[in-house]
Image 1 (tube, one colour):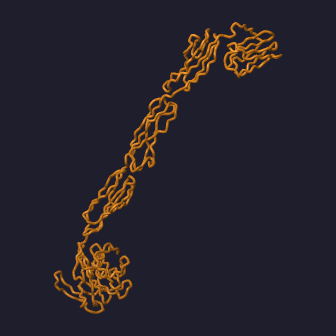
Image 2 (spheres, rainbow, N blue to C red; image 1 turned 135 degrees about the horizontal axis):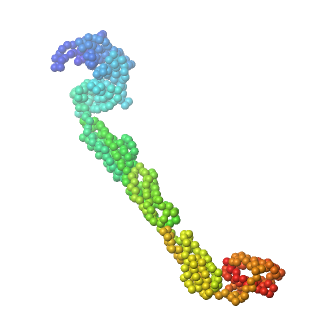
Image 3 (cartoon, rainbow, N blue to C red; image 1 turned 30 degrees about the vertical axis):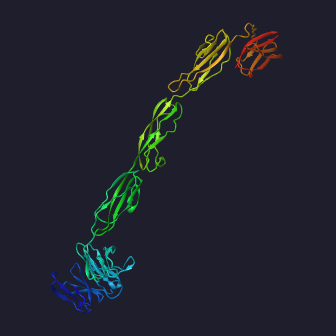
Length: 540
């Protein structure tokens, strides 16, 4: 130990029995001027803080002078009232350069390494020092009445106790020591006591992984610990999921997106426990979303309608607009598919927050309706020419005919009608009975009259040298006499009524316009040289 007043070093055994002393007052090698600190190097050499001479003397274990370093000043490796010293197991030397308000870190030969001169902008007044087996540095700060703990890189990792007189507070820590259990012993100069600080231990903390689902209500995290320190939470890694934390200590979790999230629970230092933390993984499973195809109906020959999907299971007010990839509906049915039932298959949906459950539907193709178009029939004379019935269906299927009225007045073979010898009204009904794809068409009827021949008994003086045609006619009737000029032309309807009379002078050729007449059967009388040529003409 150093004897400051006698400027010497005294050696005692573990029981306090005096062994020897060496050194005396002076400034030469092996002499001291108010020595204040002493420390052993791992090699057994003794390093003595010679405060009055502002240097460090190195002695062998028996007190033989080996070397010294340092001088008065404020430069690197210089001292101004150094007080205490500590040496770690690597041989690094820590000098409390007190009146320079700094801790100098030197190698074993006194070469400057670095210094610690302030904490958060506040100047130090280091007065005592100790170092533990792990290289942590403990410094007594005289001015602030506190103990500072630094790692081997010079970073402050903890501090405790501030100037005061109550238990745990320290007033001028002029001496400090640390045992193998990290228990700190601090000399409280002005309170005239030694204060002992037991190091904090690591608390236990339980914070287990959680599994939940998208759509779960907000919930509180519940890490537990044997420490009384406050617990707070933070998201440290959002892998694929997303949450927000709120409330006291950020303990309330609100889910934003499915996936996994790393959350850390941190416990503050409290009492005999250090601060600690633990991470856990929050797994947010996707919610189930059911996609159901609504039943659809159309008729044969139509294009497929737009199919509708109904959704069940949206969470947090979501709707189909949030789905990343919407499902689609497919079917084998085309416009040409036969009437019947066809599956509607839904698939292909994808979303970050939903797993899809699909419910297929059905498309019903009904038989299509069809319409019959039946051309009007003109009146016919008894025993007249054959009449071809003309009716079509919108489906393109063949139309059949039946006589529903006047069956004794005409005969029907397929679509060819033959008027008989008796006049009267005949009604024909056109039908299409449908098939696998078409409903039966509504029947369509047309009626006409079979009338007596108004010119029956009138002789027709047929003259093969007169051309009358075309027959039937639509626009014009051409009359061409190869011999004599035409005198007069008379056109009768089948009631015997004169429709028109044309007098012709010196013309062998004549065109009679008939496009304004109602379709039907007419009698055309052509007079040439007092003779009459009677011809039945059909106008369409």
